[in-house]
Structure formats: structure tokens, C-alpha cells
Length: 282
Image (cartoon, rainbow, N blue to C red):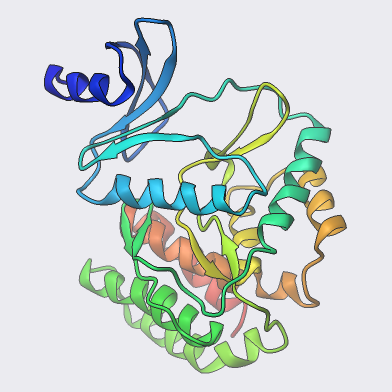
């Protein structure tokens, strides 16, 4: 981090900060730990496009407002940085994962009158539209699937095969989602294994959100994109707030949004998976 920015952050926290160590694992932002003169440590993210850190901070605050599940406390954010509480990590024990599932179900009890959010944000490095709509069918098709489909075309990945299958998905979407209607629920929006922590007290901590109000099945489906969470997580969730009948059938339609996004972000290695997900409904 350059000296000028570190000086700005020092003023924000009220004491001098110095760089301690870099943190690996992020594919979008540069992450590091900084330490104050009194020994307090913070987690610092830098290097994202203008507006991304503000959206991330607002998402964390929205989850925090629900009083259901922990997030890192946001110290301060600017156009090119986000400074947060540093979480001391613990073990992902079966008990911790069960309680995580219960807390996540409790978070989904936070509802809104419309689907969407008060601002657009990001899913990874991709812009995510959150213009509010009355119905989940319209919101999910227009702001999730169709938005990504247009990006696929813009990025040069659209084929006649994908175009044909997407048209079939569009025509079948009302039937696919039929019977799952619920109130808009507060969603993390991008919950995979890299976007949560278990702290030293065994509490789950949500990080890197792409928050909006949507169908909670979309959040649960995303957890399974890279192999799924532990059985205890789903047990805890279902004990607190079971999903509607047919949720397993609808998983692939919600995974499609994220696989489309990975296709746009990382290229044709995700093309076959996108086609396979659509084929499951054709």
C-alpha cells in the first residue's frame, strides 16, 4: 500500500498504521493485514474497480443490520480501499457448521416487500443489477440470467447451441419456478466456501457479499457449486427453516447464473457446465 493511503487510514483509526503482511487467496482484490502502534490488527483490501468496496461495505452492513449472523465490522472504506476488523479464525467443527446453517436460515427470515436492493453491486468482478421488481420470476430472468446472457454475447462466447438452449430455458422458467413463491429474503448472494469464516469462538462470519433480496433457494444452491458445505450446515438450516418442495429440482437454474458469470469472468472452461445445467431442464 502506498504511503499516502496508509496515512489516510491512520487518520481514520486515530493511530499510526503499518503494513504487516500480505494475504493470499483473493482473485479480485489485493489483501493484507495492517497493524496499529498499539498492536491492533485490521484486514485491508485494495485494488478493485471504483465503487466495488463501497458496495461490499454496504452489503456487510445490511447483513449486520439483520442481527442474525456475524460479519467483519467495517472500519472505513474509500474508492480504492476497504478496512475491516480482522477475524481470528477457528475450526470448522460439525457444531460450528450446524450453528452456521441455523444462523443462515435466520438471516433469510429478514424480508422485504420487493426483490432487489437499493443499489446495484457486484458478483465477483461482474456488475450485478438489483433494480427492484415485484416478482421473483421477472427479477431472476431479467437481472440475473438475461443480464449474464447478454454479457456472454458481448464477450464473444455465444454459440448457436447456447442461444437455442437459453431460449428454451426462457420459455420453461415459469414452470421451473412454479410453486416456490416466497417473500423476498435477505441473501448473501455469493456464498461459496471462500466467502465465510468460522471465528475463534466457533461463530460463522460472512464475507465478500453480493447482497440483495431474492429467493433463499438461490443462496443455498450457490453453496453447492464447488462441492457443497458439510452435511451439518444443511441439517442446521433445514432444522430452522426448511426449503419448499422441489428445491433440489430448482438448484440447477440457480447455479446457471453463477456458471454464466464464471464463463464471462474466466472463459470457455465453464461453457460445457453451462450447457449441462440447461440440458437438465430440456
